[in-house]
Length: 73
Image (cartoon, rainbow, N blue to C red; front, top):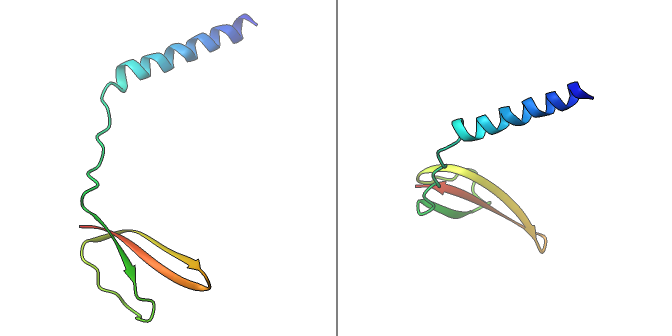
């Protein structure tokens, strides 16, 4: 039982040292002003988009499928 308590204490101290010494800086949020959602025309076989595609999704609503792309400008 003493070994288990000692192991828990060492683990807790290691976590505290890690949090205090290694994670002092905060993460910067990304700028969300450069993103654009584009609805895609499914009748076409290819689409030309400006920027970089960072997301893609298709949804079905009332037996119709709509596809969207998220681009970063």
